[in-house]
Image (cartoon, rainbow, N blue to C red; front, side, top):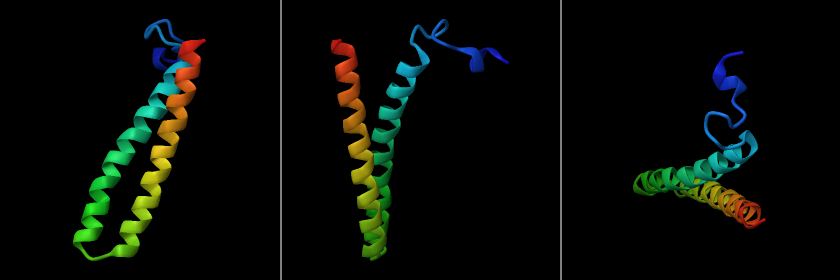
Amino acid sequence: MDQARQETGGVTGTQDKDYNLIWFVEQCLSNALRLENYIADADRAGDGELADFFRRAQAESRKGAKQGKDFLRRRIAA
């Protein structure tokens, strides 16, 4: 295996499981931001159905980010 696949925190100083949780939160937040553009594009095109679809997806991304942040908060406080 190459070094990246063997990383368990020795290089980054962060255990994989913790890094994965941080990455997950970042991706959820990034996705929520990206979806804002998709919603605006659909609205501009007059496609309310697609805009609503993206709004629901955005809400799920926000939900994932909130849950991940709550999880991180509990882990950091411990």
